[in-house]
Length: 106
Image (cartoon, rainbow, N blue to C red; front, side, top):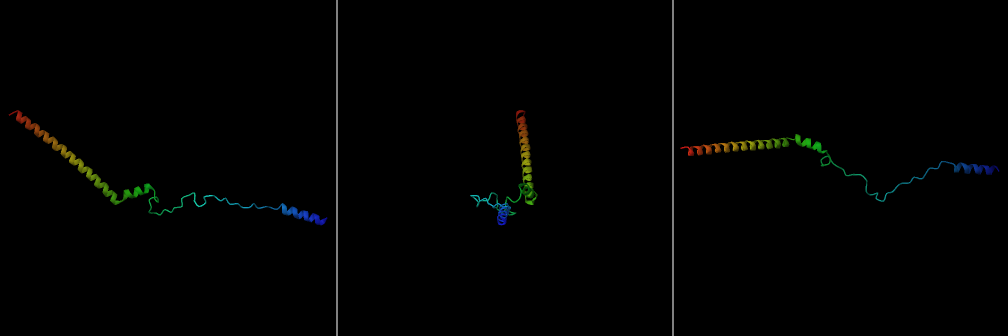
């Protein structure tokens, strides 16, 4: 009878022990494709810096400043030429009207 109790107690201890669940790993069908972008971007590629920073760098560059000055000078020259042309047309009109007055009133 002692052996029977000993075997029952031993079975009870073994069966009531903590069981660790088996670890299962989820395997996806498309495990070769990562769900995120892993492409390395070096510091000189277009996507490495933000657009605002690139714009500030471009604006602060000497070449850009020179091109702005050149454009401003060209627009100023065009305005001066336009104004000179208008003045010349006005003087020509005045001369023609003066010639007409002279020819009408001899």
